[in-house]
Length: 236
Image 1 (tube, rainbow, N blue to C red):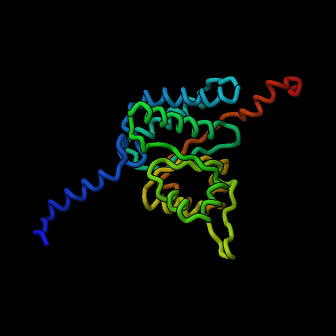
Image 2 (cartoon, rainbow, N blue to C red; image 1 turned 90 degrees about the vertical axis):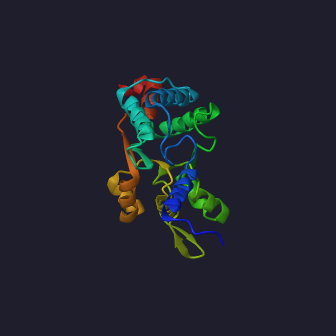
Image 3 (cartoon, helix red, strand yellow; image 1 turned 120 degrees about the vertical axis):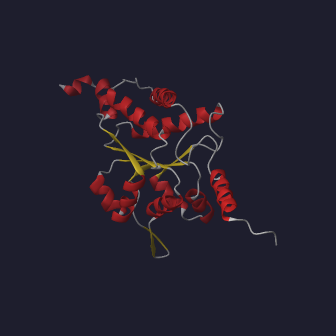
């Protein structure tokens, strides 16, 4: 056996190990070392791209711009130790569009080597998450996914599923485990605070309140607006 190290050496070793756990280009698992203003511009470009892919005209508005700016600020704010983003609001207000815009933005950043290749956003529908518990490998990979994990449409999935007569709570377990590991998540949901407590339970919502940055969407229903633009006679 070698000579025992002193406590100062141990501290330095543990510090180096801690830094090694972080993905390059990130100040921790949830924050990016990039310019906030530049990130805002990229997110808006990606948002416009997502809208254009649906062959719908993008109409700039203060509410959408505000949501984009809030997201960019959070992703670059090293003083904020929260590591979960919750995009909440009624249907068709731009939550999923912003989540996919964030994924596209991270791809641009990795393609141009502004952040590590390991930085990204993996998006799964909440109902899909329930099926992944059937594979221990897929489930464990999901629990420990080191970068951003997106849960789309939280609340559409069953809160409880049965396997061999045993009740399981996939989304609750996923949030709990990633909370313990302080791994970042992005969640979109149509549920309000009362509905979240009913769906996930008080304990999980309490943890979300600790670790989550909420961006509330107050836009009008974009799908309804698009439908009326094609059927103006319906307004009369």
